[in-house]
Length: 264
Image 1 (cartoon, rainbow, N blue to C red):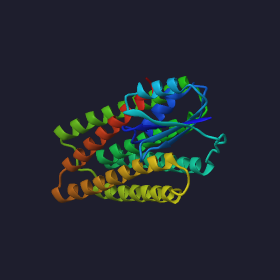
Image 2 (image 1 turned 120 degrees about the horizontal axis):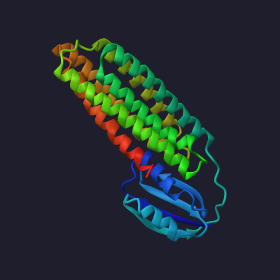
Image 3 (image 1 turned 90 degrees about the vertical axis):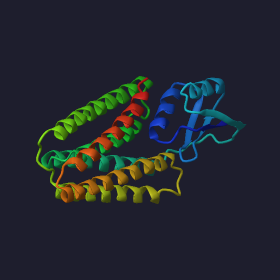
């Protein structure tokens, strides 16, 4: 068994990890992939076929570079059940708040909440692709990624159109109380996610560290919606809500583009 370490400078979230996994799928010599996203390192345990492995990584143009190759006696790679449970928990929380925020956002006429709900859905897609496609074929992984990416893009475009309509129209003000209250609950939920993930830091958990990056971004967005709610009330204008909605829709589109890379 050989152990090869790659440095991948543009690997900074689960999307890049899934992209690499998809591209290496089907190389029979690979025994295990160990991702260290915070340090942008990938360790491949394999039996030969290093040229094909290196070629598959380099063609992704993620700044991949082989650092070292050495023999190893390690042949057993235990699956971390606790890690999967945590990912399922985070996925469930994100999807639950997608439903809550999109519903309350539409009722309260807040595009900030609607946009934040799509960001929650985007995170659910990323974690879901990783979990649902485990053990599946490359074709299945690409199909899931393509459906998720295009669905997300479609929702974001609809959101942009609605923002423009409200910006130039005479819509009534969004309910700032609902914006703030729901965003506070979403902030608490994301805080719980971060706490659960931090509890697992002593374990071998590349996915957990990557998920913490996503959840930290969610916290920032939650705070943005709260600030927008305060400004809606203070300025008696829906513009802060539309501005934060636009910003989050852009974030959602960028996430969709990463997901669609998996389908290529």
